Image (cartoon, rainbow, N blue to C red; front, top):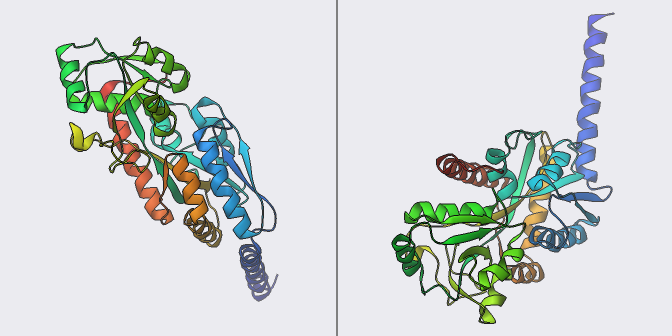
Length: 325
């Protein structure tokens, strides 16, 4: 073949591919977008995802279909997202558990949490509340630490399972405070509440939304929140950091990922749309009721957050020899 014809043909193919990609980005979205939630329906991640997805879909003129794919600590849904076509029509709402903790706990994941996803942006952050049994003679974080030091190993703390954010938050607290507590895992924090009320376990770091009603009913005591700042849901409740353990912070982040190699134009569009949605007053109000605060930001900022958070939890997991078993 004439080399000039071969070159012209190659240039034509490249030009058509670029034109198709540009047209695809301009036409996006041309059909509904699937947002995979790697946890069960009606849970905190699911409710948060639906609140945001509804607004994003309305703004973009296409439905955002929430697809719950729970199992394996979020790994099943995450794997589906990682293996989807990178065309912007399959997204994942990820959390601290799936991308900061899971990769260090579950050593045989079928995907690489760092390289098999395209970061789109953080959407929210949520805090936990430190709950204790009414029978425990403490009224502050400092008193809890002092009590634990005076009774080493005698305090039991509940969690929603091995390797969960709730579990690791308690371990981080014990490490920084220099105390020893016994871990009692449950299949969800809700199942531990009766035992906390009856003093079979004494300590629990629970979601502020699900934990506060028991405090308001007088069944449990709340000592502090684990966020950097006080929560609007309980403004009179101090942070752990300001009430006995300086610098302690343990939040749960929520963010949007797509499969790796997504077109930059589509990533930019999605980032803008999610930032716009979480800035809407009605979405902010719904998130507040879930105990979450909208965050937003760029894909690069989200990637940096996850990288730093992952390194922090990796150190704790190694130090405390924590496994998912």
